[in-house]
Image (tube, rainbow, N blue to C red; front, side, top):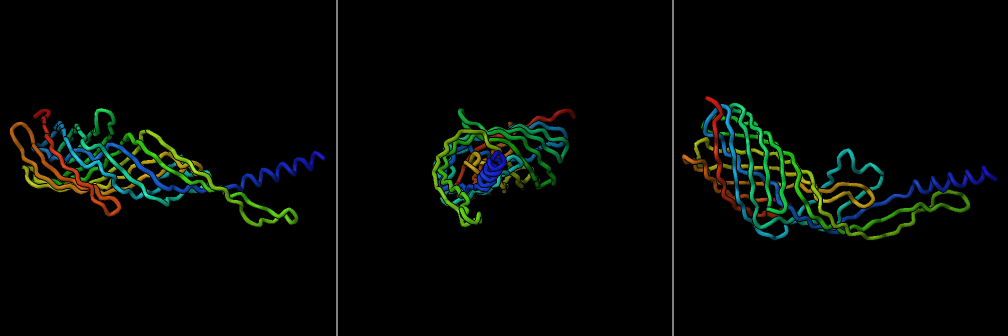
Length: 277
């Protein structure tokens, strides 16, 4: 009798182990300070330098459609369940943001930076590495990684599939599907990275930049533990004018996401201090 109980219990565990779920994202919205960074004004001098920039930018509060992509790392998406996106997702940002970044130029080619961007209530932060070259025309490639405070609301539909077996033969005959819904509202610090290229004249004038930004937007999905985020492109154009007190920069940027362009306009001041001779 005890053996029969053990067999029945083992069979029950086997059936339970075959239950799977699929999370379907029906819609989501995320609000955050966009961590776009300051404009990378090339150094006016050479050698070991300190450079500091502060920028103020304005943009529309209109929601930007976002393409959601799986951002799973080593800690997510390992339990056998799955998730997918079905409905629309949107991103919005404060109408005005302030960005500040401090950099140290190690010689003529290497730049190390720390930056902040956001409002008095919500601030994104990052560390950055840049490799620069060129004399009259500066070309800098850079990479940044950091975190941003994201408030997100996600509405999920959860489909649970339970195997159905024949009571006579024990063979699998199909699945029983149950559907539930869950809304997850969170405020959390989410990771991001961006890579970019900036081209400008060393002594001022027009410049152009392009950045690729990847940011986590949603916490893990209800049953699959999948992390979802968005990849966006940032294009920028502007004019920098060196003065005895620093470099003034005016710029226009466009955040490109899902075929839409979200315009951003700003002004920046950059100061520079040479260390040593």
